[in-house]
Length: 537
Image 1 (cartoon, rainbow, N blue to C red):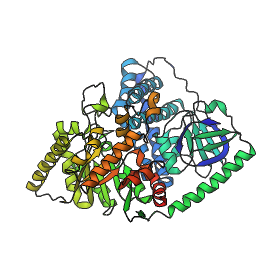
Image 2 (tube, rainbow, N blue to C red):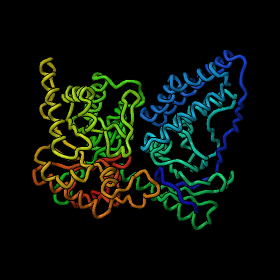
Image 3 (cartoon, rainbow, N blue to C red):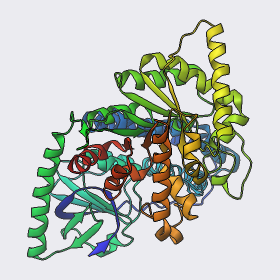
Image 4 (tube, one colour):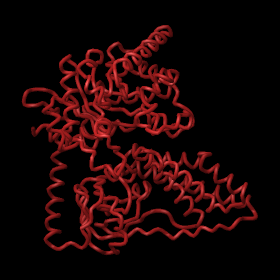
């Protein structure tokens, strides 16, 4: 038995298909005719785009439009002067052969992304690797892709790229296992969407199995069993049958509202990063959007999104939710999350530095563009706006002053906005939790961001493997701060949501309900499971 990271829930039993890539031989040899080498590169880039377009279409048909956006991003990388432009420059200036130039540029970009202290952004290095691998394969004349012919196959690989995962035929592939990877990688996200069980980060799985071995993938506990005995296979066959029944049962909760035995209505909402994500929340029976992370509108581009672009994004989500509440977080960037068009100071402690509301209050030009877009979009649905990283009432009041400035501007321009927007704040700094009863006099709601609240409370960096054992959502100090926040809000008749990972934690949900949490917001695929736990209490 081997232990890894449970990346996609479920169980699978099948035969190993060991996915081993072509050995890529890349020469250091210089070229004489750089013009010819540039032509080779351009032909390979064109072929990559053609392949990616086909994968995108297949993904839309088999998985969904949102999941296909990763391949749009890959095509953008192939148009990015930072990538292909740098490869061309390397060929022209140094007579480097095309394959070597691709390898050099992609390795440099991957190093930059992998050094970022943010799990989501660090995993974007996988996008660069995926694109460069495809480009190198096309330059070398190798076939690209993963073709599975046999049913009940378990794919075993060192790693699976997003395009590998998107091409998995769900009727044949029952699960996958990799040496490396994490829960936030595109392939793990794709596996969860396809509902294919996956265990990643095993370390040595490719050297521990051979083609034709029988393996069990336990995507619930993160275990992999190689050539199990009959009793183990039988036990897991029973688990698979029970899990399928459970999934069908959960679908009955799609349109069910959670009401406690005391008659209190609990909202179970979804977290999104892009406007397209809203469809998955709707498909999973979400009561609303508890967190729209707007920073993703600002990423993967060379300039900040315009007021009009943001207005369209917010309008899209509000209209799609048809009157259900949408909580949008203002720009949470800075420190560990950087933007190419926004120079930021280097800091020793970026999580405690110039970021989120601190940056926005300093860069009012940036902040006002977003606030104006939010105000304009507010007439299309039920909008709530929250400010991140608030440590005290002064910051919240300053943010509200900027809102008032924007309202005055819009009024002067004859542009309407809703007068019923709720204005709240994230509780992710312990000081805010301690002062919740005072802060609640000034806000319309709180949303508890447990990812940061836990690491700040326990002084344990959530990205550090060395201190990960200290990162405990159920630590009594963390629970006490959560209880203080909820009690402080309720004292003044204000509601409290939670949008951190803890909101979808099966172990934490009963305690949070007992404390009086009003809204639970989580990844879309966790909504139905959370509803069941809440209804069972």
